Amino acid sequence: MSIFGRKKERRLGVGVDVGSHLIKTIVYETSGNPLAPAVLKKIIVPIPRTFNSLRVVEKLRGHLFAITKEFGRVPERTIIGFGPSIAESSIVFWETPLVLPVYTITRREARSFFDTGVEQERDRARSGVFAYPLEMYCNGYPVDSNFFEQKKQSVMIRETGFSAVISYFFDDAGKALFDMKEMLEGMAVEFVPLGVALAEAIVRTLGANDVFLVDIGGKYTQLLFVAGGVLKQIAAFPVGTDHFTNEIARMLRVSFDEAGDIMRQLIGEGVGHPKEKDLRICMKNKGVAWKEKFIETLNWFSPIGPLPERVVVFGGGAYIPKIDDLLKSSDWIKDFSFAPAPKVEFLEGKRLWSWPMQEGAPTGYEEAGLGALISYAFFHTK
Image (cartoon, rainbow, N blue to C red; front, side, top):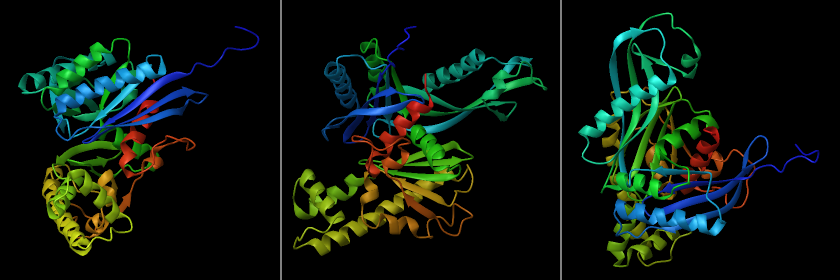
């Protein structure tokens, strides 16, 4: 090694949040000890409303090619987070009896057991399947990473089990994603359900081991239940900010984009429109309709256990007037929790940024997913 030292390696990384209407990306370099991101560029790519999930993947592929061309090198790591706009996700648990009981299981054997369960799920599915492991069980009890460091367990292991996020892609988007990964040969691409990255980042950053997460996107609202620091259930319903925008477009007979501009003005200081009062009543009524779907979807969480009182809200829909009032009301939680009322907080992306703020870092509610993906990349360092 030179007496003058060696220049520290600066690795190029990419975090991509594939949403309903936007592909949001942060391109960054990592350096320093401990490692930290230096944002090179934040890129927002609109997705045409007419695109199905397959065409979204095609647009994503072109977007990644463009990044490689612009920066003149292949990113060493690319994390792509996907949500309910291109895949339906749920948490599945399965157990597998061992043919011969054993006292030890290696990481490789555990991975083989997990892959076998996933292949069975793929055989049953009608679309592409992606699986992300959450917890491993032995004889019905969860084990942590220290389990593999022990040379021999005190009891004989007779069965293994796993809980995992299983995502079913729409419109052959799953196959297209994996084909894209092969086409981007040399680019280390990883897929992660956005809900997983969000849950992990919120647990780590906010210290929220028991929390209910509400992500209000464009086409969907996704709900996530975290207990004991582990993601326990995911559900989504097809009502998001579009629900409000479409109604404004209908009332005023304007385009969807014009209605979106009007809604953003309503969120701010008002629009000075002759029908502003009616628009605000409309927004309130649509909020009530959103809440009805929200409560209906909570039934998915009943078998898991009572919901915690802490509720964290984010996504573009967190800006919508009255959403906070709707969620802070105690009426919805009484049938799903022991808490008398929810403790609601709104999460901006900058709260998930664990480093000094800089230009291009995540900021608002709609960029919580981006903040979570960069946090995920650094926590799961390769």
